[in-house]
Image (tube, rainbow over all chains, first blue to last red):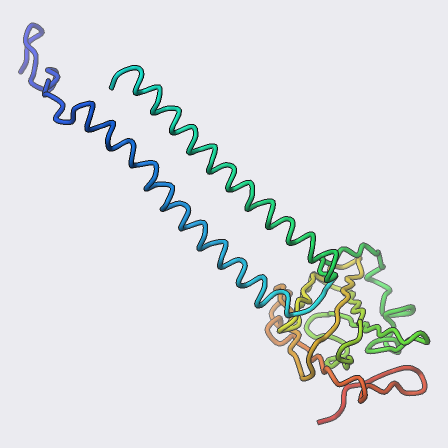
Length: 66
Length: 185
C-alpha cells in the first residue's frame, strides 16, 4: 500500500529524449502531404473513372427518359 | 521546430487543402455540367409527372378502365401505353411498343405502392396510389424485355412482372381503334 507521502511509479512521468530532432521532422513533413495527395488523388480518380464508364457506356446508350 | 518553420509548414498545408478543394470543386462542377448537358441535349431526366387519380374508382371509368388499357396510337401517331399495377400483376401482362418512336408510358395502381423498371432501359419509376406515374422513352432495340415490380407489394410480389414487346416500326400496325396488342409467339 502506498502512503500519502509516497508516489507510485505510475505517477512519475517518464522523461525520455525525443529521438526525432526538428530537422528530421521537418524533412518528413515536407514529403507527407505529397504522398497523401497522391493517394487521395488516385482513389478519387478511380472513383470518377468508374462513374464515367458507367455513365457513358451503360446509362447513355439505354436511351432518353423523362 | 522553430516558429518560422512551423509557420511555413502551416502555409504548405493550407495550400494543399486549397488545391484539393479546388480540384473537388472542378469535379463536382464537371459532373453537374454533364448531367445538365445530357438533360438538355438528350432528354434524359428523372420522371417528374404529378397527376392525381382516385385509386378507388380508376378501374370503373375513364383513362384506366379495362377497355383503355394497353397500347394506343393516337390520331397524331403518338404512342401511349396505359397499365394498371395491382397485387400481383400488371394489366395487361404484355405491352407492344415500336422501336425508334417516342412512347408515353402511364401507370396507376388501385391498391398499394408498386414500382417497375424495364430491363436494359432507363425506364424506372414508382407507382403510388392516388397518382399517375408517367415516363417518356424511346426504345432503341427490338426484342422482349422484362418489366418486373421492384417495390415489395405483398406475398405475391415476386410473381408480378410483365413483358414489353418491342417490334420494328414497320411491324407496329394499329387496328381500326388504334390499338396494338402483343404478337402471339
